[in-house]
Amino acid sequence: MVINRTNKYLKTRSFIKNKRSNLLILSVFFLFPAYSSCSGDKPSKPIKTAVEREAVHTPPDTSTIPDDEFGEMVRYGRSLVLNTAYYMGPEGAVRKNLGNKMNCTNCHLDAGTRPYGLNFFSTHARYPQYRARENRILTLAERVNNCIERPHNGIAIPLDSKEMIAIVSYMKWLSENVPTGTRVKGDDGIALVYPNRPADPAHGEQVYATNCASCHGKEGQGLYNLDSTTYTYPPLWGAHSYEKGSSMHRVLKAARFIKANMPHKQASWDKPVLTDEEAIDVAAFINDDRIHSRPVKGGGENYPNTARKPIDYDEGPFPDTFSAFQHKFGPYQPIIDYHEKKNLPVTF
Image 1: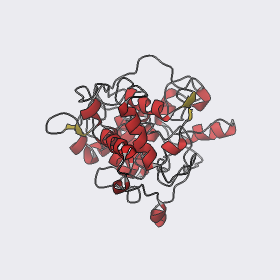
Image 2: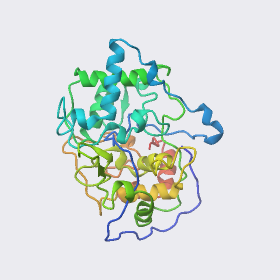
Image 3: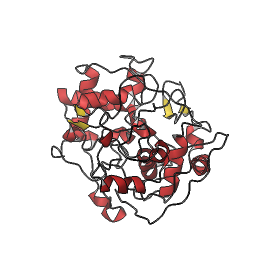
Image 4: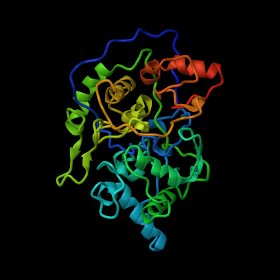
């Protein structure tokens, strides 16, 4: 990740307003819960932009899905990612494991195939992998359930179920040209330059009203499709949105997604609409727990190894001297500098 080093930082700005507003098009989930997007808790690397557009990974075309038993499972897995609520939502056609009506593609854009859109380009190639949240090695199927339980506020599906096998098969097919254990261009979050101040939810509210509310609603409630079986645009806070334990609940994680993809149908990773500061501020507004409620995960410790916590994760204890407020909203550079000085991981 590109790191902006500065010599001083501004005092915290006052930003709580007692009114609600308007937000950005996060085609989310996984949220998510997948708000970790199956990408691992690893530091991001600097990303070059338009000049290397041709170098961004291109996933296989759906026309190349084989016409055999494996291909049948790949197609079903892709359909599950696109229509998760239909198949597995509260009124699911095959099982009822989700606690909300969001689809995986709300966060993993274009069925996990959009560059810098929480995609699945190299997901299968990098699992099993260490996950800091659980402090152990997770299989890909376990990671999928992590998303079902968090952003979807749901109940894990059996690891040997047809649906799990189909989702993993789809991810395997997407990663077919990616060497095991490697990443490809476009499969991580886009780099940001951090402001020399805390994120400003009050300014983020203005950004939301201008760029996000028309799709996600003035109160962040999202927009249902015609028969209310799922969302055309997902809710960004409230009882039917992602949980506090989701990756998208972290300001920097959300901001990197927003910068590369929002507003919907306007922004792209190489032609963003929002500035870095606008993306960070609107992510702070969306995820400000003082003004927005959302489901809370019960039980289970997150990041038992405190040294492995992402720097924007705001629940203590912390391996450093910074407050929960600063971990949540920044400024982030002093935290990064401290971690580097103490040889602590710097993860986002």
